[in-house]
Length: 471
Image (cartoon, rainbow, N blue to C red; front, side, top):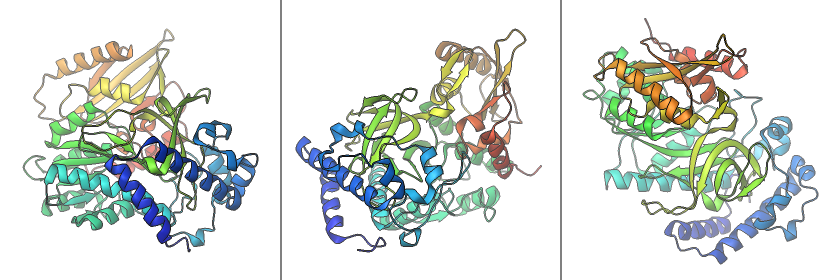
């Protein structure tokens, strides 16, 4: 069967198993059989077809392999993917259904083609998540969607465009950073088309608000937006509450994934992310030592893909710091819950403390309303201690007492992160903050003047040009 078509036997088997998964009727015996069979199928597939994995997994005992013996296999790292490039693939690119690649902002761009099996098994979970979420919020009708993410060489536009069509939801692709669109046109279309749901990165919620005010719009009166579905970077509860204070709209995570690993987890009406469990065997590891901590806990997420498509990855170190739990969700969806707290590489050290991006954002924004952006600036102090300045941009007609906001923010940083900081309110925040995780949270939100700018910082500053508004 061509890689451009899904074998009907696999489609039926997968659809039946995933249907039972979504219904919550799978027992431990069926899970064990699925995981073992799919794991062995993937390892056989990559050893037979991928030059990299033929070498990398040469010593693997495929016939005796089970999820419980997974730790015997070596990790696959991002450096492996950047070094091996096309040799990681299990088929020539010409046999793929569609070709994508990573942005290359944190290293060499790596090829991420997908075949029909990859697209089918990944998009099914995005479609089901959107179907349930829209039903919970809008009942029998579908809202008007504004899709705000890159399409060229990137899966965002294809995935959500295809899902919208399957659901029968009207949608418009209006990424403001595209040279064919821009913020002014995107806002005009949001207004004219009565867009109700915006799908994009969290930073876009703030960037759109700032641009809308620049072009003379009233956020509450001129737009019908009542929901932001976000992906691509951390979005803490404090950030979501701040967005609500700007737009009067809720903010929920809809997708956690990557070009390499596809749709790893999808969102629900309760604001949780649920692992696309039939597609992955998850592990949590200590990012410093590489020691496996099991299938739940807090640490770096490692994934073994269970779909034998064109680029399945075995024990892939995602570089993302997560909390993985087996808690039941009020939405009724099954599957482990994934809370993403930032990239491991985005952890920062301030005053001798190592801090996660999510902890800093939550401390900064908890209780803050009308914030259009934030940035943390760290300078070396004359006595060798770190000098921290937090820059907050608030709405010009912000109702809260500015001095009280600054004092409360500074105190939360001390209480929750052990960091003393001066808080500066500004109307001229660095546009790099609106790049969000296009490069990295740290490059966008954390200006470290204790060291020379690295390649990520330089890439973020180049990307920030697209967020400059006319004077």
